[in-house]
Length: 156
Image (tube, rainbow, N blue to C red; front, side, top):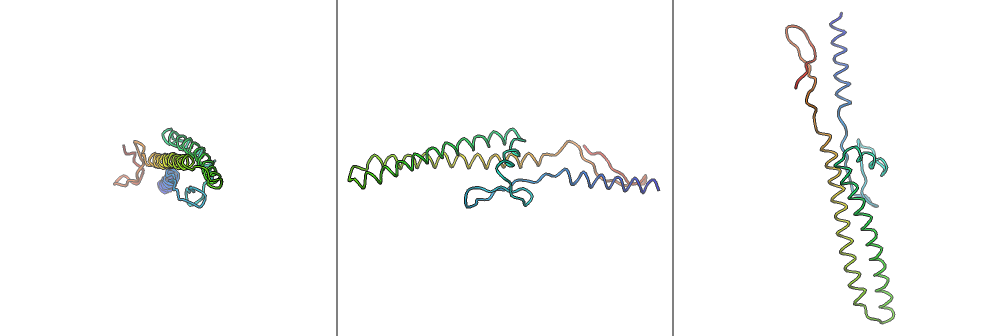
């Protein structure tokens, strides 16, 4: 009777450790208004993803770089919008449009570079977070059985 209880207890602990030990990776998909993040088939909010990224220092570093690059890109996009309006006004008033065209092209190029850096850092942050989940501990419990009975062994 004691052995049956021990076996049941061992199997219960093994399944409890096995289910709690695996963390779910984060996946990202491009949505209509930007990237959407999912974990375990549930959509994450920006606050949740910020909190998750703060768990890993390397991921947090890339995530913060991504946020700064995106903010800089939005600033340059505002300048791009302004230079587009400047172009339209000059075109309507029959003034030279060389300056607005150069400003529009330059801010468009700089904005796209910032946006690309933001996406690259965001992707790197997610990959680093997912990679940190795959690290195994230096030991694990494995079920064993031999002539002495059934049990759990600690493997290093």
